[in-house]
Length: 129
Image (cartoon, rainbow, N blue to C red):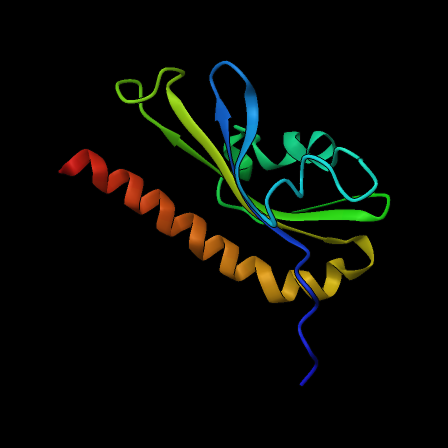
């Protein structure tokens, strides 16, 4: 059995009504806003992580730009009563070296999709209580 590729960075992001797409959790902390060389990785990928498009809701997305890549699952929860902009947009993902996208896709995307669906269900349950 082949070893799983290293996961360089994991994150959770949401669309903030005033700031736009923001990373609310990343590990290691700050890893998507600047790497060791000071590059702002998040700026290049945020439009693919937080899409708001129904066609990508809950679907696996793979994006590669140069030597960096992001594997993520964007989600859209609609509610005119609950959210200021009528929807909660969020995304879960991992960032990996671009050369490892094929191996990381197999190792990560199913788990990310399950986690995104679990978060969606938990958010829906908050309305019921």
